[in-house]
Length: 281
Image 1 (cartoon, one colour):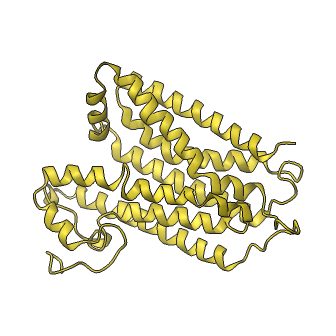
Image 2 (spheres, one colour):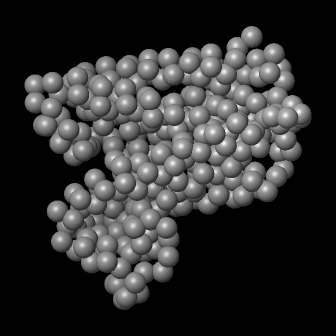
């Protein structure tokens, strides 16, 4: 019988193997940006692996709730594979990501080691920690006092599904709008301020946060999931204050003078009507 610690340890070991293999490919091709493609797929892998290892009553302690387990697994897989496919398509033939160029330049002669420890292994750990609500939600849903299975259709689960849908729509539509904008030669040198990008500077990051808070709420029917609230908090922090928005905006402010005006009138994260009158307002 596998307990939760064993299942989670297997997930961590698999993540280390996957990110180490991705690092090998990156070194061979001298493109450390490949880690971004692995990011979403790694979450999907953790969900499928945990679902598989806890698929029987003996493995999940008899608490696993089928419908909730499927919601969590499919929700994670759809989000992860869509993200990885989009990043792979967007980055095809592109040069190294400036974030990694800067990191490697600061690392000096230990560039490869810095990339392995500070990017690839770190991301393996982040995937494991952020996916804890999924792991716990797939493992058990019993009430701590009675052992009874919590109902799948709960207020938290309904809100979670709605939030997940909002998030995946924001990500997909925002990415599609930006790709269409960049594909038009008439927009060369112009800043994207249309569609969802008129209401938030980062519809894809906002969508990511919604997806992970939604998955957390779906899993919250399993009472131990409440102990993993720091997982969606960390994901939101990474998007808004960690390696997401700040690094991207610093680069845009340094290279695109018009970006400052866009910042002044457009919400940084949560969508809302633009301030003042922009080119479309």
